[in-house]
Length: 195
Image (cartoon, rainbow, N blue to C red; front, top):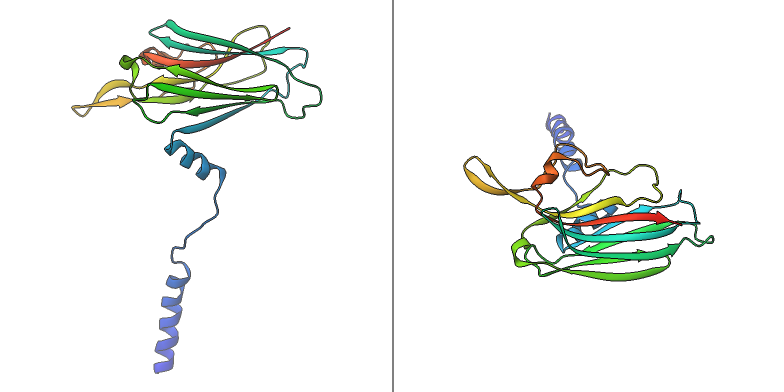
């Protein structure tokens, strides 16, 4: 009888030990992205593999406050060299905190790499977040938004003041999303392919 009780107990208890939680040390790219984001680093990569190599890639960086451009920089990154197999543009941001005086963008392209600082006015040193703009086919001879770093806005929730940065729908290249009107300050990154 003792053997039967012991065996039944083992069959009941053993699965509990087998299905117990265990530490998974394998890191996925999402884990690394989340860790980098916690320390203020975010990486965005854009493929231009379908683009014509006869065109120069111009990158536009604009600091905008209430629909006025405060600071604008444009860089001609040149034509894609035929030997380049992957035509990619990387944008790496380094923002240490919401109250930072300077936001840093590191632009990585096969032809060059550079760092562009943006000195932020004290009035706009509030929580900012990256927002990607919905992409489609490659566009030529037209400035086309890629993403922006926008300031959260104040709102009220259950009687408390909160900062909000949420969207009901994707932001298209036309930048006509209604919620976008609430973003007082942003750094907009756009590309242009020109002959």
